[in-house]
Amino acid sequence: MLENFQVLSPKAKTVLFSVLGFFALLLMSSSTYIIEPGHRGILVTMGRVSPEFAPEGFGMKAPFVTSVIPVAVRQQTRGAKADCYSSDLQQIAIELKILYRIPESSVVKIYQEFMGDPFESLIAPRVTEALKEVTALQSAEQIVKRREEIKSKALQSSRSKIGTLLQIEDIVIQNVELSKELENAIESKMVQEQEAAKAKFIQQKAEVESNIAVIKAKGEAEAIKIRGRALEQNPGLIQLQIVEKWNGQSPMVVTGSGGGANFILPLKNDGKK
Image 1 (cartoon, rainbow, N blue to C red):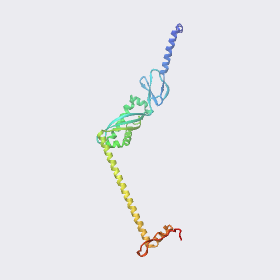
Image 2 (image 1 turned 45 degrees about the vertical axis):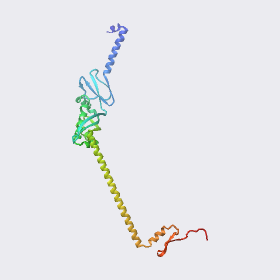
Image 3 (image 1 turned 180 degrees about the vertical axis):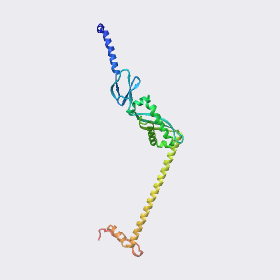
Image 4 (image 1 turned 30 degrees about the horizontal axis):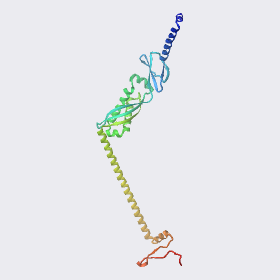
């Protein structure tokens, strides 16, 4: 065989080496794999799934007969839409975002039992089902006003339905779409409630101001009453107050005794003697 190789022409040798190199490269590439960060690998050998997943990074496998299917385990966000009915039989379209991830312990099981995208086959149906159950117990007006409460109950119910196979991180209600007539009716009612609350506030404010005025008036009347009793018991108190408030200047006007006319005293000194 070596003799046959030696008799080959240089061109034939080059072709042979190229073919051998190609097959060696193909064999090497087929026997290795790389799992990207945030993913785990499902090893399938001739239709049989390995019970252990492949971690991220570089790995070896049987060439040509084993394939590696990557599965994301990082948190993912997908949108969904649910057509629901309220307790008063109003149709409501709800747009939401679902945040979820696949636990490492469920990677192989999900691939075996839920072929394809687990979101479409497992998550979206369970979440929309839970959301419909929650909204069926609330009126249309309550659904609009209590988004956070609706979301919390739907999230709890979704986690109960799915179990530990998948992890629902959160649900975000982005939009609640009502019929135009229902939307106008709810808006009108909310405006009326706001106006009623404003009127009640104004009434309460007036009552408080009235009570303050009454208390102030009672306080002033009591103060006058106390001053009157003090003057009756101490007649000299008026003279004392006059002295305390006197600014040191003589009065300009003096009242005559016996109802006589008032007269002005020349109190200023004009410099003449």
